[in-house]
Image 1: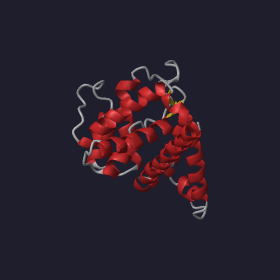
Image 2 (image 1 turned 120 degrees about the horizontal axis):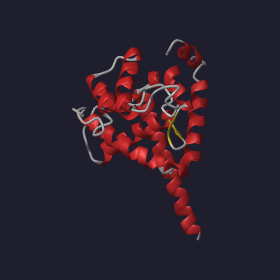
Image 3 (image 1 turned 90 degrees about the vertical axis):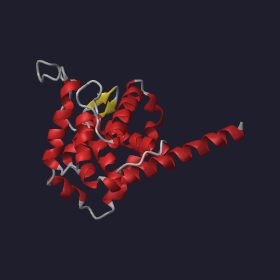
Image 4 (image 1 turned 180 degrees about the horizontal axis):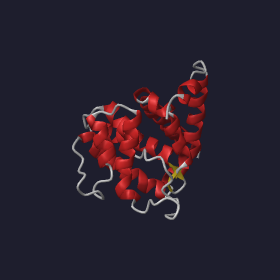
Length: 202
């Protein structure tokens, strides 16, 4: 019994460390996105189940990195991460009733809205644009991904959406919350410049 418990603890430690490494890699590639007022506002928009757009985007970025590493797919990791974070940058609540805000065809139109919003705030590479615009393929049948990074994010988005809809991520919610608190504490220790940066973005 003790041996089984020790294995379980070790498994959670490894999971925690892997989660920390992925989040660190994402922070290094996209500090401007993570600190932006508009990106942080997606914490208040629900995506799938009880998952916010913000957490979904982080999940897709982490899953995309995992896919590229597991399958040994060479790619531009910075573009992969940034495109994944911005793939759902539509900045509205698509669950709002149609008579208030007509988002009935959200699945078809939100990639274009996300790309439009992202281009207003960031200088996007061709790969990042392809990721954002094409991630809903094959629903958007004519928008076929043209680079490996876009294909990876398209796969990661489908997988994460399925897992989130059926609450598979729920089991390690406490783990994510703990990491977020640690990261927020570290940001505050960097000199208090974060709030000043946020005021000029979005």
